[in-house]
Length: 315
View 1 (cartoon, helix red, strand yellow):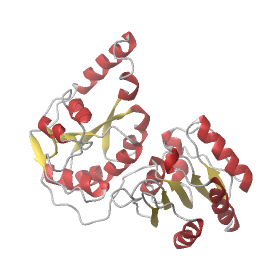
View 2 (tube, helix red, strand yellow):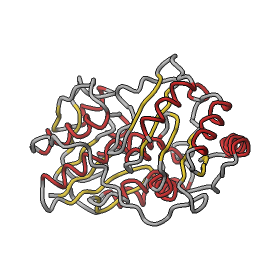
View 3 (spheres, helix red, strand yellow):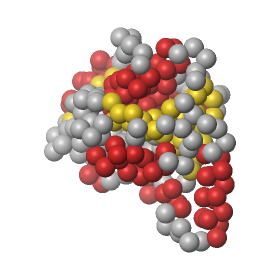
View 4 (cartoon, one colour):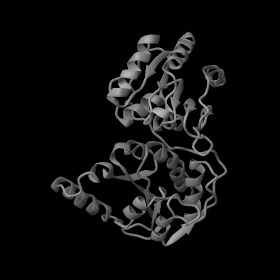
């Protein structure tokens, strides 16, 4: 059997779909699994031990210049790659009209969430096979249950296995054990006070750990540098997603905002504390085989006292 998973973005959503692939590989010996994903997030399915082929697209870039010659050429090449293999099933785990349209470029029957389960109900009209999955489940559990229903195997009772294999691309601040802080996010509403980040870093340094403060854009780098300078920490150079994942995998503890990198750290089995300032963690809290804590919620910015208390539970 050959299956194509469609889960293109964002980073956290891609991370949440990884355990479903582990379940599929365990339940169906010999299954071959391909994955369609945005190029910037390709490192995660590429590092899953059960994924055979990763097909990338750059829709976020292409949609801005659909009439440009280079975009047309890139789309032609992508369509050709999508049709290289016929699939026994194409599973849209994204649940959007956009992702459902992407499935139409591959060869094989299409499947996904039903009208009541899906994020954008119109997308379900593209599927020949559908499954009902509660929207009250955690994102990881929704993906696992969808795959089990569509491929007709019992839903495993085991904890989620993210299946990630590191590739020795880690950046390290030094020889000592280190903690990673992820104080940057895509929206200002998600940010946590900079002075509190410094206090957390100083607390971790007192525990004998070096501090690495991660970033992903020039503006975020400035924030990371300010925090690192105030606590004697380190700021890595720009890291690819693969390098960042391996760096997170080597950390003793990770403290981060509600971002994909924080979810990736938990997926690597790190003790991870997620700080939620503008979103409820219930259906998308940090999940992994290590100790994990999700604090805060919509309009409930966690206090420094609560964060430090939770850090004690992770040590």
